[in-house]
Amino acid sequence: MNAQNVLDSPEREAEVRAILRSKGSLRALYREYYNCYLDVLNRTPAGGDILELGSGAGFVKEVIPEMITSDVIPYSGIDRVIDATQLPFADHSLRAVFLMNVFHHTSNVEKLLSELNRCLKIDGRALMIDQYPGIPARWIYRYLHHEPYDPNANAWQFTSGGPVSGANGALAWIVFERDRTSFVSKFPELKIERFETHTPLRYWLTGGLRRWTLLPISLYPFASAFDSLLIAIWKKFGSFVNIELRRTG
Image (cartoon, rainbow, N blue to C red; front, top):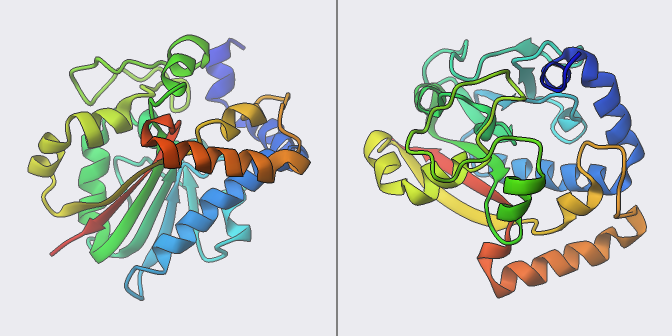
């Protein structure tokens, strides 16, 4: 099986779950991101379903048990197999939608955004945690990371080789920062409530979903404090970004 097929195969689930169990620092980072979900959820109207797109082998239900987990790949632990560009939900039925490192894997984000616009309740929210080409992340994404990265792409679409192997790591930055005027024009009912960079170094030090790590859990609090210091100095140090959208009337 070639590298692309491995990334796109549900057979990788056991490996990813084992990595998340064994790497305390990576698990702590995931839990931190899931707590960001909770923060957003607490600011949404009552009633309606809560959906995570691209749940993969994550453990969000440990933090939000009522979350509907989903993925385009049929992992064994998810609730539903869902294509993010064709959501099987009624209009204005979702209270909140969450995506962690999913946006840049979506080959047609205009369809995804249209579906969020259709399915979210009035004042419902979407939180996208995704890659951001800050410093030093832009060089990591360009030269060291395994996923495609093209900050000069004119289009918001790309040709997808697979649900995980297909990507443009600069896509969130392109849509919500570089082309923000175009986004506002196309989706006036999706208000950008927050665009917040974070996590300059911790993810890279954990080794991500690879077997190695440079950040033992005992050093995680110190790495977190240093990350926070870097962001306080300059927002462009972020390697990731939280993008919060609110569905207006």
